[in-house]
Length: 123
Image (tube, rainbow, N blue to C red; front, top):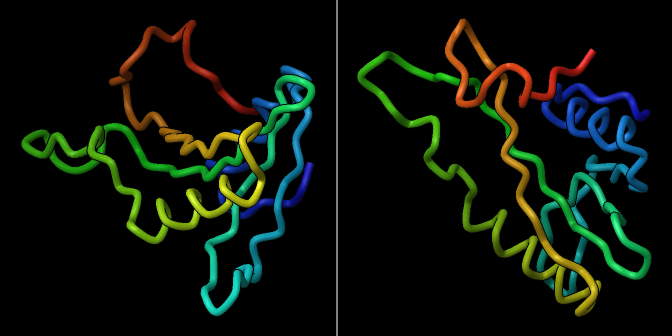
């Protein structure tokens, strides 16, 4: 497993490893160049089925977040740059690939969106 400072990405990587799903963790230190434009790096290239790939960008957030009056935890927080870059990667990889955002949540406290037996708990 790659050393990851982002615990959401580390949890997703552990999820893939436990299920023995083939993947490549992408080195995100530099943005890729496509012509004169730069692309946000992917987090993972996942191959769940031979001949296909998922191009994954992991987004993480705590659940619930904010005060009880703020129900923002289900709000999409992907930026236009995220969407533009993931769409460009999908075009580069071709029709057998799919760009995916994985929204990973760190459960904080005793509230969870699913029963405990349906949650993935890394380490």
